[in-house]
Amino acid sequence: MHDIVIRGGELVDGTGAEPVPGDLAIDGGSIAEVGEVKGQGRREIDAQGMTVTPGFIDLHTHLDAQIGWDPALTPVSWHGVTTVLMGNCGVTFAPCKPADQELLASMMETVEDIPKNAILTGLPWDWEDYGGYLDAIERLKPGINVAGMVGHCAVRFYVMGERAVEEQASDAERKQMADIVGYSIDRGAVGFSTNRHAPHRLPDGRSVPGTFADPAELVEIGKAVGPRGGLMQAVGAGFDVLKQIAGASQSRVLFSYGAGPEADSGVERREALEELRTEAGDVTAITHVRSSGSMYGLQSRFPITGEAWSKLQAMDLAGRLEAIGNADMVAKLVEEAKVEGAMRLPPDNLYYLGTAETPDYTAGPEQNLAAMADAAGEHWCETWLRVSRESKGLGLFNYRAFARNMNALGDLIEHEHVFPGLGDAGAHVSQIMDAGWSTFLLSHWVRDAGRYTMGEGIRRLTSGPARVIGISDRGTLKPGMRADVNVFDASAVVECQPQLVHDFPGGAPRYIQRSKGYHTTIVNGEVNVVDGEHTGTRAGQVLRHKT
Image (cartoon, rainbow, N blue to C red; front, side, top):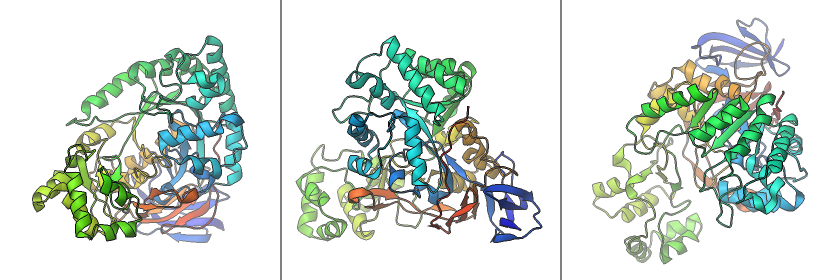
């Protein structure tokens, strides 16, 4: 008798191999048998017509705060994700002196759009070092597995105080930072993250600590990370800096990458990455799965300024719907929108997601706001207001700031060492919603576009990211591996429309996005999600680094 038997599915083992029919048995939180399982299960899952895979691993999240009040870690857990990597982009809550808690919370608010009040009230703040933070997360009993990196911004401020923002560190301070990072990894961090993206700013407008740090500082830290087998993660770092990081650590390096906004092809970017890997070694890129950017609509925010627009923004959704049904109010809104500079974004780069159950992320130019207005013989503002009324305020426009050319993106993600992701789950919560990226990979890049076979698509979601993090007991369907497992209908799995809700502490808003097509998601041998609903089990683990 087994704990669970998943019977009659198409098994995709996570190695890149293509589906094969078979059963899978789970005992004591681990995979016991794969193939033909003769014994019965205390729980039997009929997977006929379904695909059975390892649980998905999300390499780029900022769930460091949300885990304090949402142990289920939505929306990613609705999309087959069973393990997340937190602590990206240098912004973490540890190490932290008690007097600096508000500063780190404020930094996370301005960089990642996570409300400071939610951070300060939603977490216990009973730690100082990064290991203590992981201890606190462990006590929260998350619903899925979490791994964390210690962030450069927090480490630098811990060592240098206010000087961390704009000054260079002394040799002694660099050594102290490296010692702290090494100790953090010894206490369970899987690596170190740094941020060199200047637009990521503190509340006072200055770039976050470490943005302009001498690369010698990262080299010193890399010497502490590498011998421990840790991961170095970077955002905003140029190839020269990445080479120095990789050379110092002689370990794995993960960085954010893109196909470029106007590129017709991603081949050149793919070739540039290959050249970097030739010189630097084990470097992995992570990129978006689709055109990404801020979303706008009557239920959320407006890209238009003006007195009437400000009044509209101050209303709740019901009030906004009533207001845009008033002819006098509509006339004022249109008049203000026609003022030069009132529209902050180009209408031809705002794409309507439609009103179908599944958002249209791959629409052609005919579905941008400017083209829709031309086709209807309207001003773009009139079109915006009309579709808002027709959709009862739920219609959304996606600003394509990143990965505008899907063909170029497809070229890029075909590279073996470019991993789709960058969902930023837990961050930019009232601005974007890319946390369903794993579902889009399956529905678009595997099923519709065919850029990946099913076997390769699942490898990109499982064993590939497991190797990057340094996880050896998850990511494949093999006996003895931890039982993080998905059962889903590959022909039907899709993202649902994003929706703005107010379920953060204090009623703060965030986008969520559900999915369809997932039958069962299992975490450490416990059923976590069935048909899109959480079961209430909290079997996730804090995955600490093992040197």
